[in-house]
Image (cartoon, rainbow, N blue to C red; front, side, top):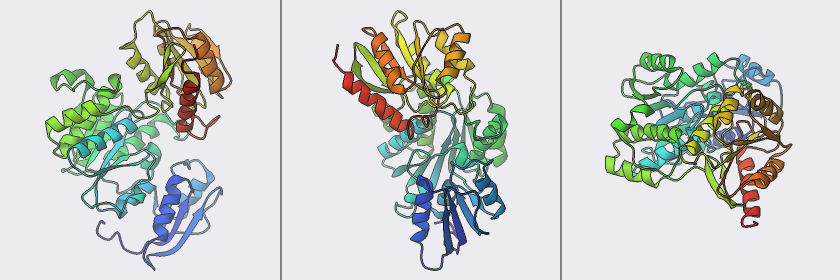
Length: 425
């Protein structure tokens, strides 16, 4: 653990008892007697009961909520679970953020490091709270953290050995007060880097200048990656599709190089890596069409990237049927609508709470839309309209909470429907 990390934590409050909150509470309850003077856990309330030396707050609690404001007023140390895990650990960290591609890149980095005989664990927003592995893994292990803007918003000391911003496009504007604030939270990944650290930035980012300035101010080595220059240092043929996955692989390769994995090992591991579940995942063959589950695409930019993967591979005379919809997170759907209309022979089926909004945007862009109320009804329409050789893509551009507990549940439901209809025609 870091020097001083075993000092008394005093009175501690865990605000929000989701996955990360429960993990923090379990860790604190297991601490030696006297290290935690008092532990209070709150959930579903508007106020923190009293003043605390430390409050660990759930990333699901937005800054504009009464509970967040109360927590801010009730401590001098309000932090996220990822910050708390960093303080408690003695490991080296990799921090990966961005609007899209975080999960694939995080898993790919772990895959490359493990191929190089380096112990590594994927933690953070990927679904495994980092605090769950703190103290249970070797001090030499690398913790590769997928870090959301929600988690970064309440970091203070978090200083990974490598920090990476894959991309930034508008997202989560229902949580952040503005796009500028969203960008600022992403840039916090670089806030505490030092001259021995590496900052990785996408040269195609719309916010490149701001990201670069933040990284340079921290004193880290800054490396700019540009997918349009990939030919200068080519990647091998990979199983993951699309130009966005080329970007993800460029980042992952540089992180593996930082930890001195040899080039032959990196090349072999890039070749063997398979797609992440719910991210352009092949779901099966039904009704003469190939079906793909991209349920993790919860914002417009992610869907646009998915469309590019198919435009690289599908003949123009074959159709790509796209299922979009769910619960919008405050995003403008105009750019996505134009991308859907530009894609040759694309059929668009909208569904869910904000499916009507997306349908309106597509129609305003000159496209035709089929409308459904639920994802199951959208699937039925796609199955009815699919022809031999078509591809059907669930890529919602929205959160799932209007109909499902999370994007994983939505993707599993979609895959189950594909399995039910396999070989029916």
